[in-house]
Image 1 (spheres, rainbow, N blue to C red):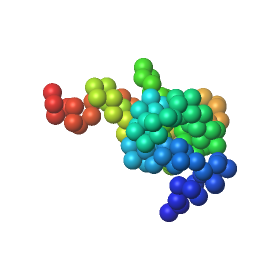
Image 2 (image 1 turned 90 degrees about the horizontal axis):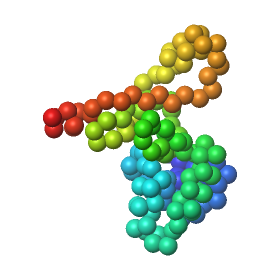
Image 3 (image 1 turned 180 degrees about the horizontal axis):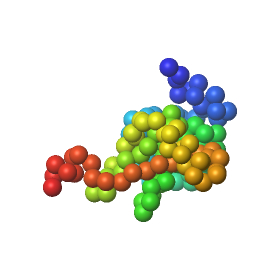
Image 4 (image 1 turned 45 degrees about the vertical axis):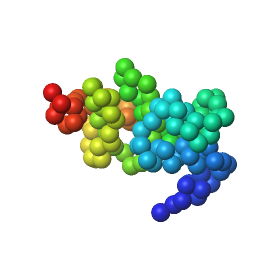
Length: 136
């Protein structure tokens, strides 16, 4: 398993305490908004600025270490780049979960129907998570 330091170097990014912490938090929580990252970072780095978080997120996204997950009617969240997958979003608690299922068939069918050559996809499904269903 690659260490976080090796991961940063592999993406040609300078190893900094802030970047190490951002990756650790994304590994721990899975999906975080910039505001959530900032709030969590303040606990360990009380002098960190929101601008620093934006700068680091943008640089890590440009090198494809992390990716933005766009959620309709919600703030974007960020995650570490993984194998292709879907996102499930709960309309009540707003939890975002990865669903690892093959997306190849969906993409090939979309290409056949549209004539597009799809280079990137973000598939988000919305509903009510099991925990929120149980609370109903």
